Length: 70
Image 1 (spheres, rainbow, N blue to C red):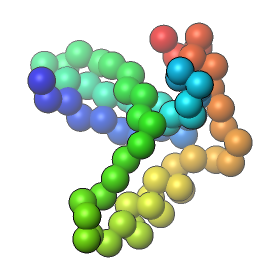
Image 2: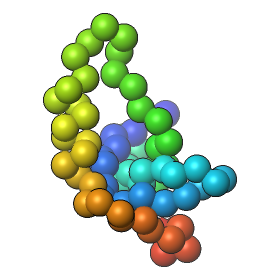
Image 3: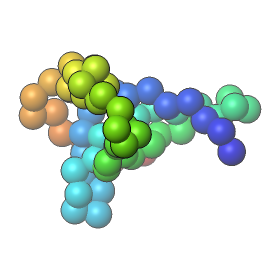
């Protein structure tokens, strides 16, 4: 399966861990929600631009109740 995901400005807790909420769509057009706990840039690559873009997406202290997402 392939999908495209886009970061949102929402965080929530899943299994006791803080996760970022992403919205996604599969290659066949099925919308989905993706919960990402950790991301990494390939080893040895400059992650500064990636980190900056991701931080800009998230207002401080934004936490979402999963009952409002699913």
